[in-house]
Length: 280
Image (cartoon, rainbow, N blue to C red; front, side, top):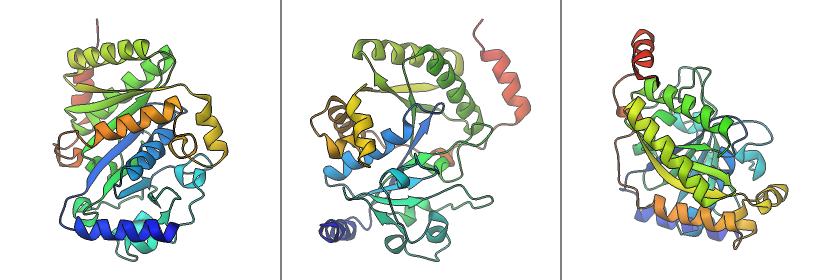
């Protein structure tokens, strides 16, 4: 089965060889909001729609996408970026057809032609922020940055802090936001609207709501099976939400990658802006 999936992916890749890659960085606004779950479920949903999907995994440990899917890859993103290995040889293949590659941020490694290297692919980055709340050089090249939060007050506050740091670290003009494990679609929409209005008013930043993924006990059950809920329980509420978001993701307009935006502003300028833009 995996060979059939691989052969199909190779055929699609040849057809798309001259199409630019599209990169989406998925960012957890704080620990345990489920950003990795969002990344692997969106990847699986996109693969089910016939897309050539690569998941670059900047996380580590037993809760990373590579560990959950039990990916035994022959190499890493560093191997591919430095041309020690071809992507097809380095990456592991999940049962759902998603290619997965460990991409732990490496000090000093900046690759400027990521889009050219990954032609024809839809790339999700399970992004790891540094100690200052900034993206890795790889994630900075994403066309879209999707920030994941939960609807509880503590998570909303942490999300605002995370978004503010990203705004000033990379001079971002827009981000997308998603509520994970929502208990009510109405409440999730209220949180998204309020956060979007706050970002526009105080940060001069467009925060575009993506919607929500409903709280679903089958999410945890799927992880116990080392699967995404999209693979394991296709009719579950969370799987339906992920497939909807994946379908809408394909319709997002193309934007300039974050890495091509102006250089990060200085710490002094950031502090001055913080004072000017803080709510009274």
